[in-house]
Image (cartoon, rainbow, N blue to C red):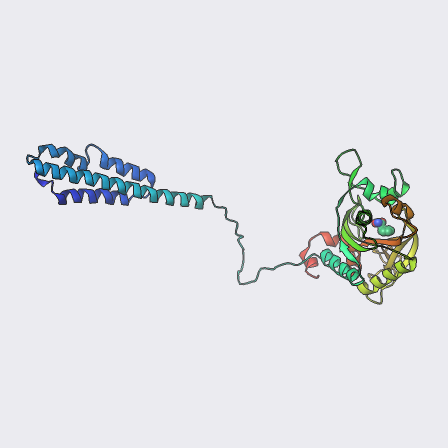
Length: 358
Ligand code: PHE
């Protein structure tokens, strides 16, 4: 062997070792190959051991230097391969951990996927808000979770008041029993708005506020336990009941069209005086009488009236200088009447054959 330890032989041994390292495809394989090359009985190590048998000192030195050089080049090749393998193993680890959040569309991809649209109630709320904006109201909204103070007490409904029976209330298990609730109407927004106007000195107020309300009702053709109201509040100087009646009439014609009539009937709400119920012609039967209107020909949309002095007192407004009116009515009920939906439960059943009509 000694005679064969030429520079070509060493270069060949190195090339073989480097090729083996370059061909590895994992860190484990690389470690295995590197230790093979460095093992006592590897071709390179046998060559190093055979140095002692070289009789020519210069030749032995030259071959020794070449072998050392070869081992260090081999070491660099191992390090380079290790760096490359670490990068690719990390990349495939990340790829394996990746969450595929793309949606698989089953079926014929040439048929465009439907985009959906706003729910009828959402569309109705937007049109109602637009009508009130056109009449000069500002539009705001407020919390669905209220305290007893905002939903009842500040509205002149102290604890034990019989009119609380009109509102089958869902209470939340927060704080003292029956102190925090899901609002039963949007009227607590009257209190929020007036408190803010007093604090900021921004009276008069002309506002409409829409949102979700809750009552412990069994769903039927005209009632949903989760429903929507839009509240109106006008507080200014010299406001009279005639202004209220005019706003209701203007709104009814603007939203339902000229052949639907509104009527106000005396009613009672603790937070308005005088108070009225606001009804419109039943659009299902056009006033003849049907299941939806309980055969009366009229559908109640909501309540209204002149803001009661007790409400002014609760928020600290001078009832001599200021007067105003409030109204509140069902958005779902408006959608039902405008589109002649016999049963309001259709609004929450999510039957696409129904939803797609609007
Ligand atoms: N909040 C009342 C209800 O839901 C309706 C109403 C609003 C009455 C404003 C008068 C004034 O029953």
